[in-house]
Image 1 (tube, rainbow, N blue to C red):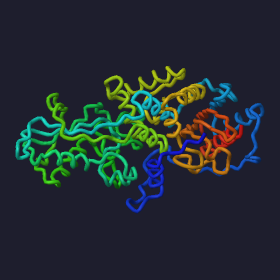
Image 2 (cartoon, rainbow, N blue to C red):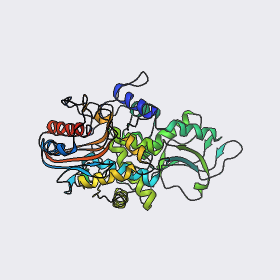
Image 3 (tube, rainbow, N blue to C red):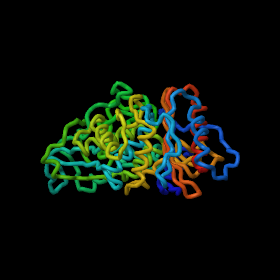
Image 4 (cartoon, helix red, strand yellow):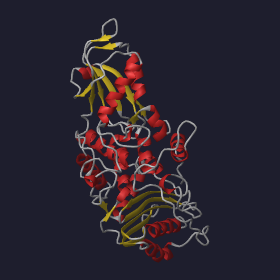
Length: 441
């Protein structure tokens, strides 16, 4: 079973790494889980099916490469039997393997078709001349993809939610002048910009978090620096776009929660891409900003509290409902105290595959030797084109967990959690050899 990415996400991936005629290749974004090249491993007799009884010693040996504290579990999804296990019930730091818990929870709790809404409301009436006697409110809904069109061309290959479209819809509503001002409303989330890894301040690996996110936390498509307040930047940008379209409105903006009466007077509303797209982007390129934003979205939607802590609670409850477990601290895995066991990761992968959103989740994972953070790994092995897996890298941590759907028709879930990593290249090599062997079972 090989699940192909959608055309839109394929285009996104190609443009992200290769650039296009419309946008220069973006600079690599700060991310400890960026794609890393490992030597192509050509296994002897790679086309032959091997015995499960003979494979475990080799899997355990490879699991110990480049690290002192491995955790391993491999499960045959057809028979339900464990093929191999090594310290698989001991807690290990997950690194970006944490994202598979975040994205699967989002798909389960918010739904594959869920879209985030960016809305503009008015707190007054519009007269026959198009004059709004009152103010406008730009209300965020936790959409991580809101930004300018140039930013989205560079960062998302033209996908995402453009602030220019919001302005066009306000113009189409017939408003020509606003007697008041534009207020920004980011109240769907708290005001905490980071996670535990950075002391809850903005992290060098994650743009500042906001309920009215903008340009993934960056000031512009140059990716040169982060904004101090994304919601204010979004609000100022919308004022500029409105004025460029001939709508007279004050330049100065302010932040305020949208009043209840104004919520009944919708001026414009723009919908994001669906959650399948969000999950794919998060896992394919190991996007920390999307993972952390989605975690707060989960908290806001399920518990009515747009905080990292609330989202983490939902993730832990969801994992428990699957017969799995995780100590969830953030959404991306940047904090070392995000922990689970190889057995629990495999239990989660097993159950998620059985759900209605299972195919979407599997398709969100990089495909060995083909795309995302696995594009340059496992080429020339049986794993290439057959294993969907999520990478994970932190100081002293390396992980690889996912699925192998073999040409023989056999299906496997696996998790390799390496802590005490002292040689990252050897750790990756060990992981790649494990996946290559699983793909030959």
